Length: 85
Image 1: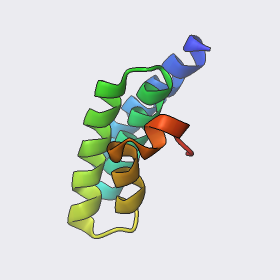
Image 2: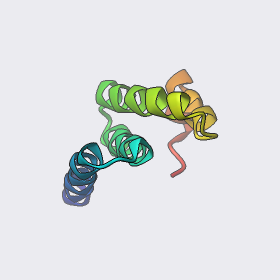
Image 3: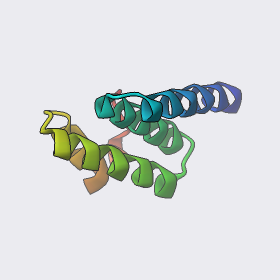
Image 4: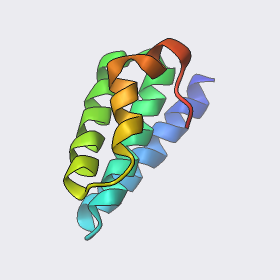
């Protein structure tokens, strides 16, 4: 299963690079969320939290409704029962 996760990380990282070059910060946040979710599934909680925090910062700045889901992830709620993405 690690191969599938590696592929997902590659795709999300590519999406993040494209989003950084573009005018839509929401896309950056989505990519950070996805990278965080994959890291979480791989058991790398520190990397997951770093990306989730980056996404939360962007979502908060934009005032989107995605803030609640990321706060739940960061509070450990989803860490104990698994991400639902």
